[in-house]
Length: 246
Image 1 (cartoon, one colour):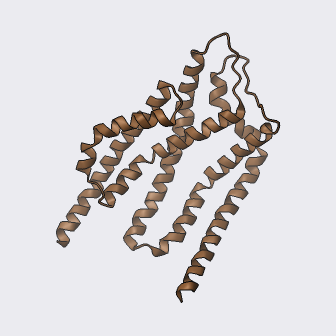
Image 2 (tube, rainbow, N blue to C red):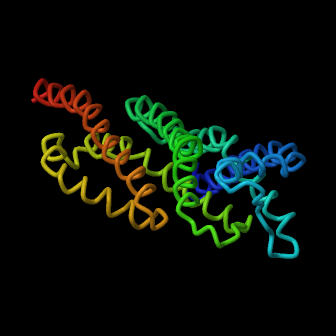
Image 3 (cartoon, helix red, strand yellow):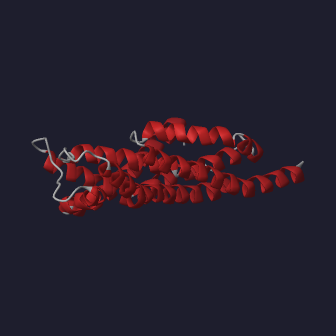
């Protein structure tokens, strides 16, 4: 097969993979769209449970009551089909990988997906409850609390992304060690700087309250430590193999 034909075949395969991923998202989105109001209510549960008695959320835009639940339905459908999306990406690049790379990449994709969902779940079930109760417990009694649903969705989306990415830290650490860009000894040496950096990152990506910053910084540091532990089991066999081949 000539080079232009090979390039064209790759483009066709990429199109087919993207189309399959899109179809999967659409199929899941249809029932999610039907239950969009209920999905938003579930998303709003941590906030509503922290609001004062009788408080409600508001919608300031004309079409916001329709658009925001639809956005939630789309977010849920993408999360549900994320394994399918990642599989299509894996299937596209797999033919160009060596056997040992395939054995490493597939568990990596599964682990990164699981860790991302773990970060989102940690944020929803634990962080939101603590942060919202803290924020509204110190709010002046003279104000009427009525959060906007679109602002809340943007806040939730940003927090989900921040915690989901944070929980990928062990994957990043393992990759750096696997590619021999850094050693475990070096990772241990820079630990104090990582701890400081964790709090700096938490201060940037979370709301300006100490509680949410601590609840992001501490898991980030602990996940870094977990990455070091896993990397120790990867680095030793690699060193032994290098010594044997040498």
